[in-house]
Image 1: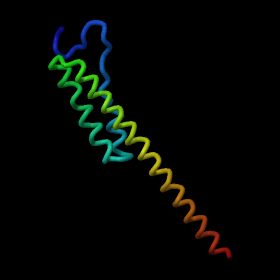
Image 2 (image 1 turned 30 degrees about the vertical axis):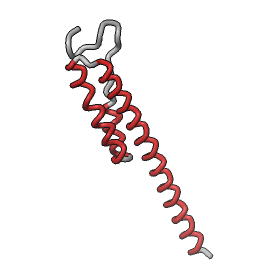
Image 3 (image 1 turned 180 degrees about the vertical axis):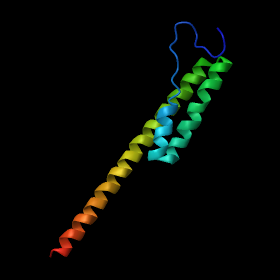
Image 4 (image 1 turned 135 degrees about the horizontal axis):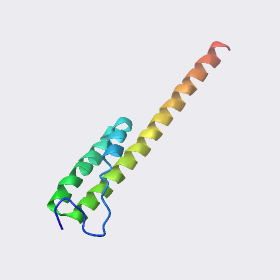
Length: 95
């Protein structure tokens, strides 16, 4: 087996870097560990550590998904609160 390539019969590993970078827009505190884990995948593959690269990719995916979910929930709550404030403001002006 050559370093940097998966063992025969094993699929390529997606580092999830794109999802990690997208998640930094929504919730940076959880996206930072995702980016760190994603950046570990290629060096581990070059060293021949396929299992370590799989684990790093799985961790990256976990942190990215968590950041996306928390970020989307936060933005949704913020949007609902803004709409509620505008509705309350309009209601009190017309009363």
